[in-house]
Length: 237
Ligand SMILES: [Zn+2]
Image (tube, rainbow, N blue to C red):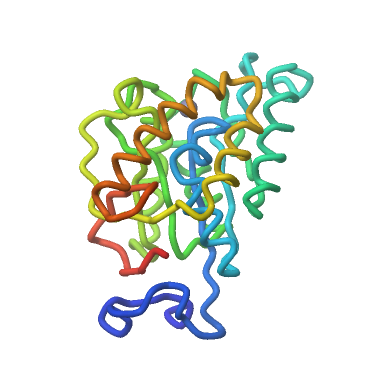
């Protein structure tokens, strides 16, 4: 659906907010665990949702400890509820890909399953985690996302995000920035919705990153991304 996309050639000087009617986009933000999309992209998610775009947070697992995942796993029930609450704050919806925390599987069957899920969600933009990351589930969600993007013939834009730099993400060199100063309170609330995950510690770290990214783009606080050049060009807010 070319009409729903923003191509740089036509709109290079226009911010995303300037697009006219009929150009609402579907945005999918994939993460290894409940909380990853919120910490890495929560401000950008809020800004996109406020512009009327349909934002989905796609979690590789529910944070459960049992594997195969048991629906009554207390980790799963608690963290699913936290994810739903975070998505409500960001005006997004939650989708779960059905894998297990700490046991992500990347094989042909799971590539196929994830690609089918992405096809159903039909994003115009897919955000996923940067691949040089300490957590294997983060690396897994990158691999699954990248494979789905390639199999789609690169029909949608692909952006990579960072989380907990120095602990998880390494070697991240972004080329796209989104000012999140005006939505930081909502991002904070969405991150703190994950109350079981020591938000005081992780939010403080992510705020250091947001301040540094802000210095790089004349903002107080920013989120930063690497855009793959192979997809259709879109402008972030
Ligand atoms: Zn994670």
